[in-house]
Structures are given as structure tokens and as C-alpha cells.
Image (cartoon, rainbow, N blue to C red; front, side):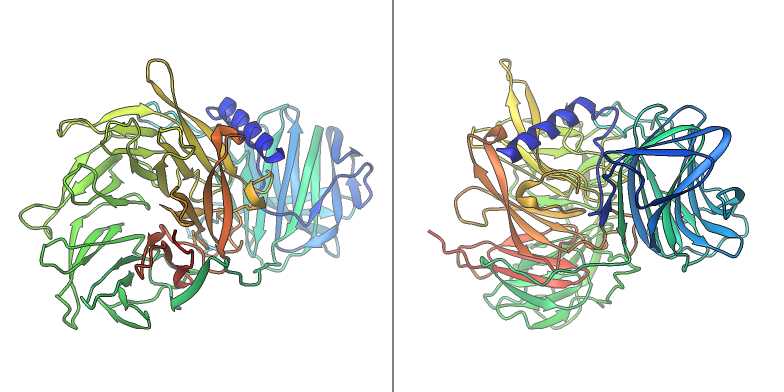
Length: 631
């Protein structure tokens, strides 16, 4: 039961430390790990001693002295990971593209001293003596190539480690402290690609700098000045080399790609032309069933460049809003709009914006208040909300109801289901759950604090995608399964527990994490931005469908493992009394060359009793026909 042990260990570590620090992680699969004793494969320069044992390196320099050690292998675009421990006043550092020149060495240097991290262009003499260091100007975020400098900008990419706490309510899930911990182990990851270097200290926010050149090439190096620094867990990857696996599809599914272009992060399904077959809307296109080879625009549909542009459609739904018997199309975010079906006429559909501000990338569209009609669940202006159409005219601005107090909305992660078993639909996000009252009112719902997400693991925010709320282990209580971070790593389920008084709490069971952990089925996925709940294998128990949003923040290394295979998986819910919590999730690959958008559509397209999967991504729109024979 090795996997069960690892899952329990991760649970204990996370529970004990979630309020202060995060577990260490690894966002890439290394080509090289240093595990040796002795410094074979490294070359030292300067005035420092370097001693290694079992992969741990201790570097010591006298006051006012410094030294370097360079790996014998050279890199241009490189991913780097290490742990380090520095004494007060000691400078630790990491050198990249250490290129020989006529007079010595030049390269890109990341310096960490006390509470400040700064990236420089550095010049050394041949013996390692420093000649000059110049701070890099700030660059990075969601571009791959550094933008031209602005006249008013300064060469200041340094980052003080400690930030003041955010204003607002006391939340159960808070950003961890990522500042340098003197005389303690710290984690650093560096991604140097093209002309931008990105440094992540203790899983904190990106510190980005412009190298001003593309062609530097040379070894990775370590540095010490005026004290002692210890290094370990050194890992390196040549990120110029990318791997896209041979295309695979599960035997359970038949794949059909109905569109080759990037239009949307979502899809919806209904019989839009009343011919008796279910059609698919993806962006501003409708693909007509049963062949899905014929389509038309409902409004001008322009493709997006997945390297540089975001689609305007994150979540998409369908419903007959005006009651004329023809299903309309509804886009949930960022500006919620209805497109009214012209009753099958070959003309463009009229568009009406009904909610002007939706600030969550993930929304839900389901019946919340029990009136038999779906509402939009979303976040805006700091509130968790749901909105209903104006009963006099659904094309007018919708009527919004605050579910939470201000300060509880998150950009990612929303779910709906009956948590407390009272028959009413509650709403969940990474901060906990809101209990729907027995009587409707304009007051916020009762809030129950719980940690149902996670910061870190190379992501700036917390919260996943659509959060599944159902009885996972068969004990009669609804649990929660979710991506922990839509732009990082982590997949977990939260087992509902009740004490003698009936108070509800949750215990987290990890399913999958990053490249440093043992994961279910040896599957590691970053950026699980699309998820859905459905009984895929026909055993009567819901399963969890997940997908990686490839190039989620465009074509760059701002997010972890951005060029990893764009996969879709079904995590089958298996009730197992020997597993932690009485259940486990078993991954089954659906496809490895498509991924997901901001959500995933699950529906029985051809009415054969098996749930099919539809995704719309920056690689096109896909149907995965479920061939499971129904009992």
C-alpha cells in the first residue's frame, strides 16, 4: 500500500503547515539530479571551499571573499531547482549561461541575501573575481519575449520577500509566507527561456528579469559570499527540448475532432435546429449533429492565436431563456451574454449582455434555488453570487443575489451540491461552503469555513475548476473533489466528517500532486483548469473528468510545465475500504493531444445511455464518444 502511505503523509504535512508554509515541490521532470559525494562534474573558481556528500553541497567563504562552482554541462534555456540554507549576511547565488569571453566569464546571476532577491547581468574575471553586476530590468508575466523597455522604467527587478497581509475577512486559506528563511532550508526554482529569467523563491510569486539577449550559452553555477551556504536537491532540465507524446486515446472512447481552430475554452450542447439531433456550440459556432461536419456562425467567429491571445469565452451553456421552444446560448464569463436562437433561421443570433461583470474564470449554470430553472453562479466585486433572469425579459440585466459576504470570491473553483443533507443546494469554493437557507432572502447565506484548495506549487492564486460534490466513499455524506489550483498542481478529494454534535469538517486526501510526489497511476498534471462530474464507466458512481488547459497563460514559462502533454483523464471513483477515507481515484487516459478549456462538457450526445465528453480548447473542439456498454 505504498500509494496509500504517501497520500496520508501528504495529508499530514499539508494539514500541519497550510496556514504558514507549503510543501516543497518540483514543477518539471529533471534531466540531471546531483546526488554524488565529491565535486566531480563541477569546476570551482574564486575563494571558497566546496564540499559534497550524498548530494548535499556545503560552500564556505571567508568575510569579504566569494567563490563559484560551475557544472560541466552547458545550457541555454534551462529549468533549475534547488534547496539552500544561508547564514545571516551571507549571499547565496545561482549563475546561468556562464559563457566564456576573451576576458573571463559573463552570465545571468540570481542573488539572494537576507530579505532581497535580485537578478543581474554579471561579468567575472577568468579566476572568478567579480568585475561588474548590473540589475536586469523587470520583465516576465504572461509573455515569452521581453517587451521593449519603457522610457520611465528602471533597472529594478529586486523583490523583498515579505508582503503585508491583504485586507478583508479572516480567511481559512491564506497565502503562505515565501520570504527567505535565514538558517533554514529555502526552495528556489528558476526558468530561463529566451530573454526572460523567472525566479520563484519558496514557491512565491515570479521575479522576472529581461536578459536583453537570446543567445547566451553556458554552465549553471552556484555562488557563496562571506559565509556558509548549503545546497541540496539540485535538479536541472534543458527546457529547449520539448516532448509531445505519440497520440493515444483510451479504448473506452472514439475521438472525433470537429473543429481545428481555437475559438473558445468551453462548449454546450442542445438541438438548436430542431432536427432531432443534439448539436454542439463551441464559441460562436454551432456544429450540427449527428455528423458534426456542418456548422454555422451565430455571430462573426474569429480564431485566436493560442500563443498570444485569450478567447473571450471561458464557460458556455444552453437554455431556452425566452420560452419560445428554441434553445439559446449563454456565455458565462467574462461578460455574461445571451444569444437568442432565431428559431432555426439561417441568420445571426441577437446578443444581449445580461451580467456586465463576471470576475471568475469558472462559473456554474444549474438550478440553485429549486425553481426548476438554472441560475449562473459566479464571483464579482468580491462576492460569491448567483444571478437569475429578469422574469419580465431575460434579455434585460439579470437579478444578482449575494451568497457570501464581500471578500470570499476567488478567480477559480466553484461547486454546488447538498453538503449538509437538508435537500437544498449549497455553494462551495476553496474557502469553504455556504448553506442555502430554508427561506429565500437577500441576506448572505450562512458561511462554514473550510480549506478546499491550495496556494503555491508555482501558481499565483488558489482554487480549481468545477468542484464535484457527491458521496465519494458511499457513507451517505457528500464529499468534495477538486483541482487544488487551476494554474498549478494538485488534485484531491475532501472527505466529509461529522462529530457527535453534527458539525461538519473535511479531511483532505491527495490524488495527484507535482513531480516530487508519488501520484495515483503515476499521472502528474499541471493546470487542471477543466473538470466535470459524470458516471463515465456506467457503474452508478460519479467519476471526475479532468483536463490540462495547455498554454493556460499563453506560450511562456509563467505557469508550471506549460508544454506538458495536453491530456484529458477520467479519474474513476472506486470505493475501497482499505484506501484512506474509503475511496480512491483511478486515472484512465482519455486523450493526450487535446486538453481542456476552462470547463468540460459531459452529456449523452447520441442518446445511447453512455456519457460522452466534449472539450473546446486552443487545439480545436473534440468529441470523445463513450463506447461503454450500458447494463
